[in-house]
Length: 331
Length: 250
Figure 1 (cartoon, rainbow over the protein chains, first blue to last red):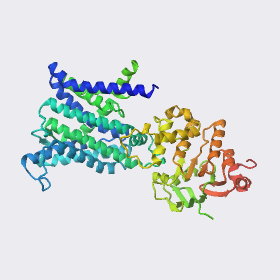
Figure 2 (figure 1 turned 180 degrees about the horizontal axis):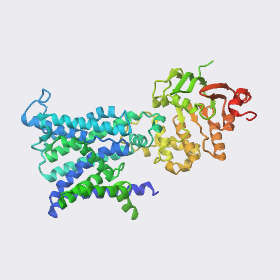
Figure 3 (figure 1 turned 60 degrees about the vertical axis):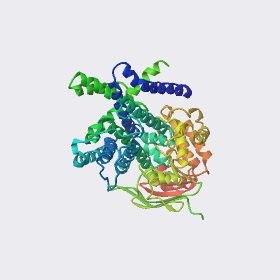
Figure 4 (figure 1 turned 30 degrees about the vertical axis):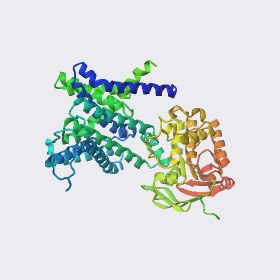
């Protein structure tokens, strides 16, 4: 084992490098005359937040939640519905509650994501294993069909968010400005996850993943810690969903569909479950593959599958394992 | 006489047609080492699991310091001072020895809803944890993941984790199982040194260990206590000799 200071310095250097790269990216994209890259990477960052939130329960806590898109969709609809009521000046819950303020709509998205996770988690976490997978899936599908049936909010056609939320005097329509807003939030969320992973709470969560019987025998009530992680994850997904609603200026029940939950799971596993940057690599990797393959052929999913299988088979720990492999060589 | 720390009163557990615990009553006094012996399948681990809360009894009471704990979940009983070790070690493969003990110290210090501070760098956790590990001669192993420890070291670590929880009553489920002769002797010595700090309910097959450690022995056969008494009394009891120790042996 290398001394902790050395690995700490190496990690700090790598993270600093990544941050500089992401900060310079929109400018480099302009210089290289590929401005669409900025928007593409914005999408990656939003998915990275969603995947990182799922990673908190799936990777760190070992809870295989197959309904994470529910919270992502709720975050999206929070922004969409608030916007619609603000635009039409229609009362929501009998009050003038609509808003297009980013600083109001986003916290609402986060809190509603967390509340939904609290309710679903409180019930689902009474089970484990396959039952837990199925129950989370069932709850997410229930929400999916609920929003399909809400004709007032577009039903299965979805809801158009005409303008992005207002944040101070920023020009949110500008791809670069919006990119930096998303980048700031993504950086903050990853920093938050990093702190959590090493905290007392994180130690309990990691122990639960490995041996919940032992954790109970130490005198720790497993259920409430799992639930807390589930709620934190729901809040992260709500954040990502709210950002997506702003990014795409459109929300639809598809945000909560089980295939979206699956997509988030693939990102986590592809990137390396239980690693800090795995979800970022996974989101970037999956979106890159989709983009490249779909530009090449219409049947891109046919080729995506085998590639994912190969990566997961041959690189333990997914893309994070791959990165560690390369950085380990020049130690 | 002072009320015992643990009192098991008419405990019954059935698995289908099998009565694994058959109206069992026994008690453990403060600071006492009470050994529970019996042939394989006598229901010793079943008793332990009912005491810890992993199994729910079909009848009877379990009083810890006068409070009936039958309805309480596992972790709540631990918080009341009822710690255990496992027959088959239950550890977290990727955690180091130090992290295991530190987690127990942490659990003992209150809730763990602290999301920001670095637990691995928290002296309030690692300080006491290192101290306990060095008492167990595991100081040099502190930063190794448990996957890299020997079986004997893991057994010792289980005990170190239990100790970090500052129990009032420790349930030891076969602490010698799978240990070599030298390791067993070491474990007996270790337990000897802990005697009196807390009460022990010891389930063990190694009779030499039981006879050298126990203040009192109860013999369990078919889920029922057929005898209970001091080491000398149990060694002399004819029913025990027939049922368990084997005629002419001891």
